[in-house]
Amino acid sequence: MPRRGGPIEKRSIPNVKKILAVASGKGGVGKSTVAVNLAFSLALKHHEQSNQRVRVGILDLDIFGPSVPTLMGLQNNDEPELTSSGALLPVINHGLPTMSMGYLLPKSGEDGSRADAAVVWRGLMVQKAVQQLLFDVDWRHDAQGPGLDILVIDMPPGTGDVPLTLGQLVNVDGAVIVSTPQDVALADVRRGISMFRKVLVPITGTILNEAYFVCSGCSAPHQLFGSPDAFRTTAHKLGVDVLGELPLVKGVSTGGDNGIPYALSCNDQQKEEDGAGGAVWRNVMADAATKVYSKLFKDMPPH
Image 1: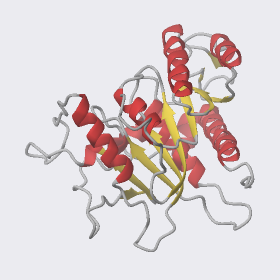
Image 2: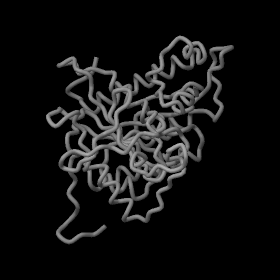
Image 3: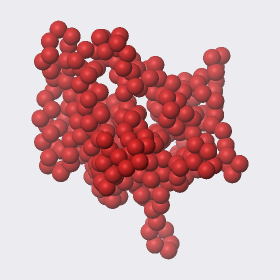
Image 4: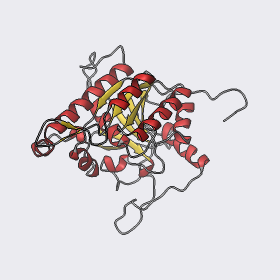
């Protein structure tokens, strides 16, 4: 949007060192699930120099369809508290601070849930809400806290107002693009990468979700949604690193519905139900988190 006095100056988010956007050009590819689990996988790592855990938060910028409250088991949580200066305080579960438009919607119905609450806004209202979520959240544990090392931002699908607002206003350190093997998803991946590059957001890499399925009776991968070759070729042509290829695992879906990210669910029953596919999923996600961290903090590799 043209402005008098020159272009918009990008700025950092208060009390956040690095900002990582997780996006997809197309909805329904598991982007929010990947974003939440990637955040927890990053939070399980340590800084090599200080041996301190990486401090990670999750910001849900999907104004119309926020998924983070459900994935974090916080869909019925009360509205966030405010600091003395009026900033929003993150809502915490499983040790990670989060913020989402889903926490700010009014509760309705006898069960006091927000299941029927809908955001019906035009562009300017959406931009105002996005700016408040970006700059009016206090990510410190307390007034004197250190803040976050990494803020993972779960983006809405597409290339509309929200990603454009983020790219224009914020110094984003990286973006992870999530896709599935289908051609229709890959076409939107190309658009998403093009959009981020136009607003000078570096592409950290891509993750292929639902790449294959490993049944309990064999160890061979079954490519239910097609070969990953097109995905790999697209990433290579665009000069983007492939961070990992995640198998299709039942526990990932059930864990998200129950508000327990799969990166944290390591009980014996879950391992037995998901078998080899579950172990591969966790290893691929952990490896992707290591690659992301190394790119964000090139001088401070994790161990």
